[in-house]
Image 1 (cartoon, rainbow, N blue to C red):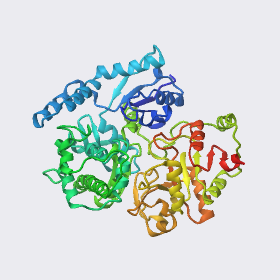
Image 2: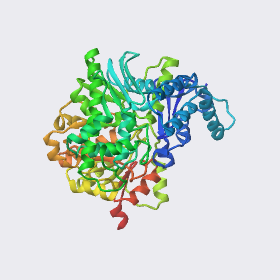
Image 3: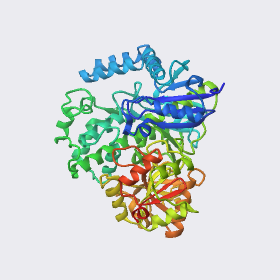
Image 4: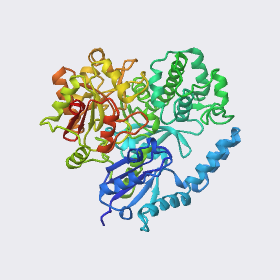
Amino acid sequence: MPGEGFYIGISEGPVDPAAAVVRDGHVVAYAEEERLVRVKHAYGRYPIRALRYCLDSAGVTLCDVAAVGIGWNVDEYTDGTVGEFFAYLASIWPVDHATQRWQRATMERFTRRALVARHHRQWRRHFGDIAMPPITWAPHHFTHAFQASMQAPFDPALVLTVDGSGDVHTTVLWLRSGARLERLREIRMPHSLGWFYAAFTEYLGFDAYDGEYQVMGLAAHGSPDAALAAAVGKVLLPAEDGIEFRLDPSYIHYGTHSWSGRFTDALVDLLGRPPRSPGAEVDGWHRDLAFSVQRALEEAACRLVRWGVERTGVRSLCIGGGVGLNVAMNARLLEDSGVERLFAHPLCADSGAAAGVALAVCARETGAAPEPLTTLALGPEFGEHEIKAVLDGCHLDYDRPIDLAEAVARDLAAGWIVGCFQGRMEAGPRALGQRSILADPRSVTIRDRVNEAVKQREDWRPFGPAVLAEAEPRYFGHGHDSRFMTLALRANQRLVDEAPAVVHTDGTARAQLVHRESSPELHAVLTAFGRLTGVPVLLNTSFNVKGEPMVCTPQDAIRTFFATGLDALAIGPYLVRKSALAG
């Protein structure tokens, strides 16, 4: 059969829906719906275009696949376990009506009957009256843990899964040994680090599940403040055992919500200052609050992992769940929890669970272990002839350099900002060279121009460097392989001196260590730039404008090229320069 051995994973959101296809433990394709529909986060949409892309990449139809996996514990929603847990919460805390409505909707959404009917309805609408493939599932935090640990470069390992919530859990500490995952500790709602951070993200005037990066970046500009630390410590505090954490839900969930659905009026009273309005000035108080929130998150995670290290003696850590995208927390875990090696899965958020559940179901049904993660180039790709046809259709002048990497490096060394559109689109939120904007990291003036003319971000948000993997000892010397930009590495003075545009105010850099085998095009550009300048580092940021997803197609790239202050566009084997067009 054509679809034999293929397993689909679907993450239907409501934020960042995505789909993946797996065979023999290998992720064949993965895509997030936002990139294909051009709506950031694709809130509330079913990932039908992502699903179509995955099926087309595998060369199969939906009715041919072995199974479709969903990363939720449908059995516990169906048999009443989740409902009993919510009733237990209501017996302890005065649950408000908004929370009750959310609980009812969640219980109804993930029952077996509702879930199967919802997917079948979408499939019939888009694929017609086909033979439906079987739908199966795996618990949410198990999905994150399986993906993070089984694709990690080490075994055994502690595994920390931490997010807003998944089924009834918010944080679980596991031990991975071979093919086995053992739960060591689990924390349930309402005690959630993800909800804690999301609440303060909105308090600080940003959008939850989008603006957490801004809070993390802002925190580096803040300072310790005893009063703010004490206030935040009333919201998130150590449990009685001194290991786990507790979230006081009266500040987050249960109470009057005059300002936001993510925090109560009690939090406003506690902090003694109204929430910041979006777009309003950010002052020292906001910076110090962000500092206290980030510090509280890091300390809660470190306590739990430190206990795991002492309990097991294992000093390798994997991270799954959306909070794993907090690179500052990951760096603190490396410094202060007793672990020596850390792998934060770059698809740790719920969108990436589409790949995680497909891997888990494939392993369960076939015994095929997941392959270690070496690349995120899993999205759509466009051939040379397709790209040329688009360029010609736009009546653009372009070159086809004999050595594209050398030509791009020369433009970068001359102070140009270059958009790169190469190969298969990256999976996940980080641009890794396939859909990147590159610039000279030696100049803070160029960095500011990237911000003002292209990205239009807050000036306190950092840009990350792409660094030749061979140069890691020169600029960091920690030996940590951060090829997916999931760590904020402590930079040494040489990086500060040679590439000041990519070192954050706290002395760290969210680095991508670029390996030839996984990122050959970017590696070639870095090599050429290093040969020209003596600095094998580039400023690397995602190829998009504010409010839009990363570019996916050649048309997206060309539109963004002309809508921003980019100077050149390396698209496939071709190079488009605005100076040539102006002439």
